[in-house]
Structure formats: C-alpha cells, structure tokens
Length: 365
Ligand SMILES: [Zn+2]
Image (cartoon, rainbow, N blue to C red; front, side, top):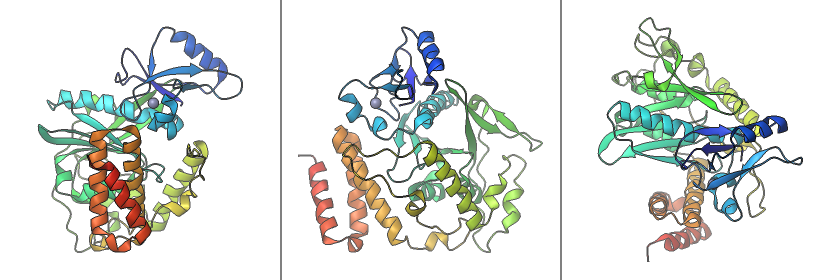
C-alpha cells in the first residue's frame, strides 16, 4: 500500500504517502524514525503498517503476516487515492465539531466493480445533520437516489470536483454542497473546498472556512430546464463547472477517459483467490439517462443495474462475513434481503439458492 496514517493511534487522520522513488523513500523513513504507521480506521483495518524499501518493487507500506490477507484495504488498494477517506474524514470531524454537531461515526463504502464509486457517510443517532462525502468522479445508483431523496436534503454534502453527475442532481434539487479536491504533495495531500464569495468568483481554501449555503426549493421537473441554466448559479452558490451542462455522450466520454486513465495508473488487483481480473472499465457501467431528463426518476432500472446491485450487495456481505464485523454484516444482510425481495423475478434459481444460503450464513444463530 502507498498510504498510511501516522501518529500515536490508527485514527489520528494524519495520512501520508510513501514516495515512489527509492531515495525519497529512504529520506522519508529517516525523517519518520520512531513514528508509528497504521492502516487507517476509515478505509482500512487499523493495524500497524511497516515500510518496505527494496530494489525490486516500488517502496510501500505492508501489514505483518496474516493481517495483509485480512485487510479490506490491502485487497483493494488504489495507491495514492487511499489517502482520501482518512484525510477527509478527519477534517470533516473537526468541521462538524466547529458547527456544534456531534463528531459522528464515519462509514466508508467502496462498492466492488465500480472503480471510483466510493463514498463516506458520517452520522450520529443524536442528530439528523449527517454528512455525505462523494469521492471520485463516478458513483452508484444509491448515491444518486440519496441526492434526490427528502432525507438527503437534511445532510451536508461534499462532492469531488470532478463528479458532475451528483452535482447536477443537487443543483436541480436546490441542495447546497461543498466541492472539494485533493492537492497532492510529495508525502501527503491537502484537502481544499471551493469557497464562494459574494461577487460569485470564489476560490479554493481550507474546509474550516466552508459555510454551507441554505438549500433552495427544487427546480420544477416540467418543463425541462434549459441546458444553460446550470451556467448561471445564484449569487451565493459556487459556480457550476461547465461540464455539468455538457451533452450526454460528451459527459460520458470525459468520465470514461478519467476512469481509464485512473485504471492505467492504478491497475486493478487480482483477487486473492487468483481469480480473473475485472472486466474492462467500459463494460462495467450501465448507461444512465441524463440527470436533467424529467423522465429519469420514473425510468425502471435496467437488468444490468439490478445485476450490479446484486453483485455489490453479495460482495459486501461476503466481505462483512470475512471480517467478522457483526454490525456491518447485519446491515449488508438487510440490504441483500431487500434486493432479493424486490427483484426475485430477475434471479435464476441457482443465484437465488446461493443468495438464500449466504443470508442464512449471515443470520444470527
Ligand atoms: Zn489494513
């Protein structure tokens, strides 16, 4: 793995990179003599990490012995992008506290088979003011549905600057959000949020200065809004990137290019069972109608989308079973159970039997 959290505990949120280059890595190790490194608690397992700087492979962090096989992050590491969940969760905890909200519990969701569809949800039972963080430029149906839901209006949203899919929905719904980006340095990164100013220019700055604008009323669905509407935001809101208004095919192409570039940079890892690698990125994502089309909400989900939801739910439950995480296991089982109930017809009898067996395995004895 290329990232770790440093400090006295695994939840310090002080995330760092191991430099790729050998001399820089040796220097990094010298500078951090006596410092403890950990696998972060938001996306990883919270166990100690150690540095390996040899001649064969690029310098990296590793777990001792069996911990490597038991760590979900080690299995799905995305190189330097692994710094994002730890860093933004730590900063948002501080931000929530500064706004008199409970620190909350951060849950990281990383659906298999969608390379960049990660998100974080910070919640606290005592408060309805949750925080939703959408990482990366592509997301899953659940996040899009959350953005349109009445519940989603109660949350503080933070969306990666490249994710025009989610921001287009939030813009239409009149829901305020902070756009963020990570600025990478040699051994760490800085999180920046777009801060709009009264003159509607704005600039990137520290998240501590971000104050969400009040939500507006949703834009009416009929008639369809003109394409240029997104280019004229109200005075109190951040300017919407032009890409949000791009035509469907153009937008798809941009996202796919970004995805393919990312895949090339961080090639998907082979499963631990030595199974086949994942299918090409272009085959994975079901085509979705443009977010601004009024019919979108009523369009039934495609077979492929449903199949993907099943795949995600099954993989998540298997992972929860592997990790022995009881709370997560119950949540994943509920989700799979609900999916099976809703889409029983689209399952083959073999699949149905396998899912039934899995749910039985997950049920508390
Ligand atoms: Zn780990």
